[in-house]
Each structure stands twice: as C-alpha cells, then as structure tokens.
Amino acid sequence: MRYAKFLPVFFCAFSLSAHAQLLTPKTTFTRADSLRGSNLSPFRNCYDINYYHLDIKFNIDQKSISGSNLFQFTATQDFKKLQFDLFANLKLEKVIYDGQPLPYTREFNSVFITFPKTITKGSKAGFTVYYSGNPTVAKHAPWDGGVVFAQDSLGKPWVATACEGMGASVWWPNKDQVADEVDSMLISISVPKGLKDVSNGRLRKITELKDGYTCFDWFVANPINNYDVAANIADYQHISDSYDGEKGKLTLDYWVLPEHVAKAKKQFGENVKPMLKSFEHWFGPYPWYEDGYKLVETPHLGMEHQSAVAYGNKYQNGYLGRDLSGTGWGLKWDFIVVHESGHEWFGNNITDKDPADMWIHEGFTNYSESLFTESYYGKQAGQEYVHGTRRAIQNDEPIIGTYNVNKEGSADMYYKGGNLLNMIRTVINDDDKWRQILRGLNKTFYHQTVTTEDVVGYINQQSGINLTSIFDQYLRYKNIPTLEFMFNNGQVLCRWIADVNGFTMPVKIRTKGGEYQFINPTTAFGPIALPGLTRENLEVDTFNYYIGVLID
Image 1 (tube, rainbow, N blue to C red):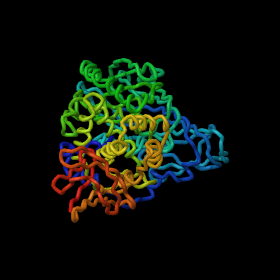
Image 2 (cartoon, helix red, strand yellow; image 1 turned 90 degrees about the vertical axis):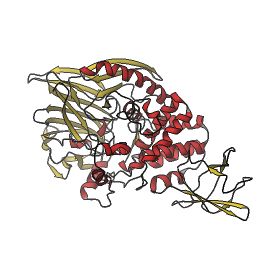
Image 3 (cartoon, rainbow, N blue to C red; image 1 turned 180 degrees about the vertical axis):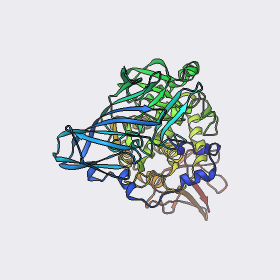
Image 4 (cartoon, helix red, strand yellow; image 1 turned 45 degrees about the vertical axis):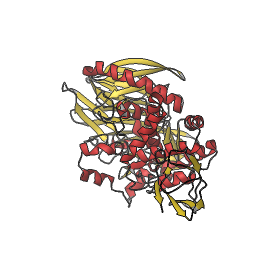
C-alpha cells in the first residue's frame, strides 16, 4: 500500500503538483532499474531461495541497524556467481561462505558474490551477509519506503518498516525479487530494553541480552514476499482472541499502544471477525493459519505485511474517517482492516511475479471492499460501492507496467481494476460460479507467484468464456471501450470501438423501463434485435459496465 491506494484524497496530504511528479510515467529505464527488476538475470535465476535468518539490532537513537542475514538456497543450475540486493547507502561488511569471506562487487543497489568453486545444480548451500548503517528514513510512509522513526504520545520510540515498491533491500539484504519468495524465515529483531518488536509469523522466543537490548524471535512457516517482512517496535500491549474459521481455530493477536487498548478492542472486535467471515466465504480459507493473524498499530497508515498487518487508521471507520466511494457504504467499516487484510489473499497468498502485474494485488483487493460490503449490506450496496470508486479513475496510462524494470503501471490498477472485475462478474452472469472462481484462484495458486496470463487463463477456463480481449483492453491500454450505436432507416446497428483487435464483450441494454438483455457486439457494426428501440429510449447498463457510449 502506497500513495496510489489513496488517490482520491491525496490532495488533503500533499499538493497536486507534488503528486503529479510522483505519478508521471517513467518512459526510460536505467541499468539500475534492470538490476532491481529483472526476472531474466542468470545471476538471480541460478538459485531458489529457501530460508532466511534475519538477525539485526535497531539503534533507535542513531537511526541505524546492524546485523546479518543468512541465505540458504538450492541451485537451479551450475554457477559460481550470484546476485543479491542491498541499498548502496548501507555498509556491506562481509559475506561468509563455508567459514571464509567471499569476494564481492557492488553495482547500484545490487551485490554480486563469487564462490571459490562451482555450485552444482540441485545442491543446497548458504552464505551470511553482515551489514550495518542508516537505512533510508521514510518521511511519508507508506507513500514512500524505508524505516519510520517516530514517537508515541508519551514520547517513547515507535518504529516501523514499510518498503513496498522501493524494495526490502532498503533495510535488509535479500534476493529482492517478488518472483522468488523464501519458503520460511526466522526474524530476530533486537530492540532497547522496555520496547517490543512485532514481526511476521509466530513469536518463538524472547531473550534478554547483556547489552541492554531484548531480542524477539519470530518464525514465518510459510512463503513470504520480501516487502511483507516487517519490524514494528514500540511499547506494545497485547490483545489476544481467536476465530473459528474454515481450517479450524485461527489465532488473532492485536499489538497496540497502551493508551489505545480500549479503542482497539472495540474497533477490531467490530471489524476483524466480520472481515474474516466475508473473505473466507468469497476467497477460501485465510492463507496463513500456521502463522496466525495480527494487526499491529503503526505510525503510518497501513500495509499488508503478511500475518502482521500494519494498522494506522486511528480506530475509526472509513479511510481516516472518509468514504472513498462517496456512497456512504465505506463509512460502515474500517478501510485499513478490510483492505489490507484482503491482501492476505491477493498479494500475499497469490503474488505477482513482476511488479508490472501489480493489478493482481490491487485490483482484486480493491474489489474485495465491494464484496465485503455486499456480505453485510446486500449485493446492491456492494455494486454501489464499486461504482462509486470510479470517480478516482484517471485513464492516464495502462494498468500493466513495464516488465523486468520494477515498474508498476497506472494507479488505476486499484479502482479501474475493481470495476473491471465487477464487469467480469456481470459478463459471467452466475454469482455462484464467480464465487467458485475467486475461491479457486486462491486454491489453485495457493502460496504461489503468478502472471496476468495465469490469472486470466484460469478465469477463462473456469467460466467457459474467452475474456482475454476484455482483460487486455482494460489492463494493457489506457482507454476504455466505447459502445457505438447507429440508427439508420429503422435499423439499429452497434459496434465496439476499442484498441484490442477483435475486442468483444457481452453487454446489457434495454428500452427505458424494460428488462436488460445481453447483446454481443464486435468491432464491426451489426444489427441489434430489440423491438421498439429508439435513440430516446435506449439505456445501456453503465452502472455495472465501465464503458463509453456513443449514439449517432
């Protein structure tokens, strides 16, 4: 979650000109972009990361970190050289393999190490990176990335990490590539005595160290993408609960500032279990029963950190008390609890292989807000909510970004993505089948990384409808299709105007006051058989379809 998720209200926080600069499309790319984003590099593809042990200390007074990360991997081919990532402003002290230091070179934010002998395909090996320094300080997290150093209302330290987009290597060394998720991970964070760290997964051990620090060991038993790995440091109070879900008893843990315990019990009590009930209904079982579900109060607004969702919505409904849809429905639930938890299914369980396909995270999760609304206030309410979010759509550039350079597409991936999925549901015209498709996506691609082609192919297969041209038009082009009607000597003709060759999409029309019926236009004019249809009484279902309409 970053600035793009809050496009409708960013004017309240920053100037239009500042955000215009942030949203300007990047059309040229550098060597640094390729090193950061490439899924094609042989120095990355040569190894599959299996396990990390991140073991670091936060010196809050100095705003610095120091420690190590153990990499354990399986070789996917014979090699002697590999790449990992660590921002250039952090000092790389040494890399140890088999008890000996390895030679390395640094290029921008990437590190290349050379082994003394060939690592053979199929073998397992490991190395440990020791580093230190002052990580980038996030000034407006989660809109920018890095580490937030703040204070609570009592003046005590309050620290959090948020690095989606920028990359986890802004604060710890890793294979900073979403296509390869580590299988499991131990996160050991040492903090000054009197503070607590809350990270992902299960708390295994707390160790009082001799230097006035306390070490918290958290173990993640499932695959996790790098930007989800989090450190949250404060004088936290713990609230525990549980939920009887589809896979049994799910632990619920809330870590909040002491002065907010009463508010947290009320707000989370009213929102978390209804959210889980709704999303397990629509998407299938919560994907991380082994790691539990946590909400962690943070000094930034929120982020979908797997099994440790960051929460900073100030214990109120809506998005900081506002309804992003403008319909009123968004004020009936806590936006951060619902939206960021929706990412546990789309973004964390199903993860894109390349940030260019970030719509898989954001489009489905934006749509999850509508489904949550539907679960408790009826289908019409859910449809009104998703329709209301259209006011944020810019149609400025394609939703899919540029591959292999860490380039996301348009911020329209959120609201346009949600409206696209609502149209796909309308075209399929079978709500039971649609629900099974959503659940099937999470089952079929459980704990996997995917591409747009994987997701669209699955929906095509399960629906029995070729929807590729619809997805292509809305994802790969900035324009929406226009439905053009021509009335000529008593005959009504219709066609689609679209960028995609051979574009077709069933759409609903009616005579005013009548029942909607589907028609199947193509990009060539064809006759419409609807008795009594005139220019004056033609109505197109632009409530469920985000399209243009042109009547000649």
